[in-house]
Image 1 (cartoon, helix red, strand yellow):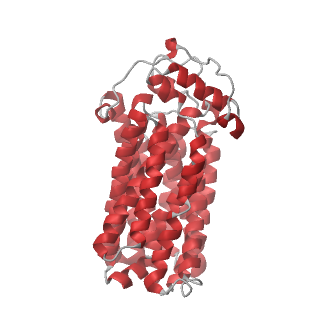
Image 2: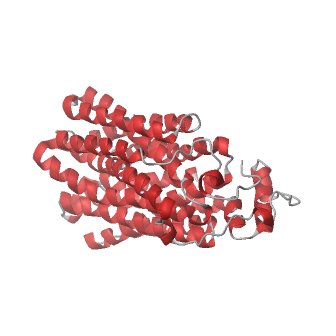
Image 3: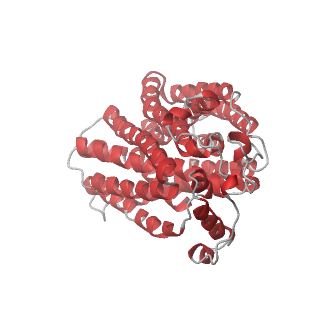
Length: 440
């Protein structure tokens, strides 16, 4: 899971990092470049919805395998794009693969991990993607588009090779995922008791060897443990208690994910506008994302120690303050880097905690779909908010962009107050009855 999300993070950051080269190659402006990001984000929304549906109807493993293959195909088409329209379409395809990967991954990991470890291990996914992935991505782009630019044919072709290099390693993830067992909770919700016991036996072995050769199947669950059947449909996500949870955490995701995508996409452009070279801008953005790594690590620790609602609220308040500080004081290189790292710390802490929270809100039959909707709302924000940020940037510069983000974080605090507390509770205690005998 972490390997797949690592490559996803590199792909998601590519448009912002290669923005000046794409503008030069296709003769486009900031608005058209922003539309490329929007196409990727909208593809992510479609991917979340499609992936969530496949995962809840036919299984988590099937959805994960399809996601990576679609992502790789889209990346190779991007590398071969002959015009702006082809690139736009290819980024939409890439987005489909990216979108399903993360939300389905959250669902399956939430279902196969014991309650006491669930929050921390869910948060580790963002250490790989938003933490290590964000740092490595801008380091990778700095290397390929900087020192290796000439070797790869200069500005006109270096970005094409970048897309190729991003797509190929993802195929290795598909190869290794053949050992990933299906979620026992999903199998049990479908009444497939024998297969659920087989999956639990593989997981109970505690090693890669046990995943491949688990031995005799043990009986962990019986037909008496099958939960009350709930129709696997997106309509269920918008009914009763599910609707209230979707609205609260979806609104929080809008603010959090919208702010993150805006900054990842615009930061190199914002720094170039202040007179820094593209190479320096990418290097600075990479350094700022060290804060993302520490933010994801902090969230991984706190997810196993502290309530979700409290952690999200505090991180949002501090993120708001750090955004105001960046807008007010980040005028020198040193302050840009330091305040940028602090801001990215709270940005990633927020996104990670919301990622942990979202799959805990829904019953097994719609867990992947519910997680997809909540995160998909954030995806829409990622498509819309960069345009809003450009509006404020044209009128107030970098300060205007960060002022907008500060307001978003203030609204996030309000939204989080309406989310149910799930910390330390088995999934069934939050979402389903009867409780599985072996849930904890």
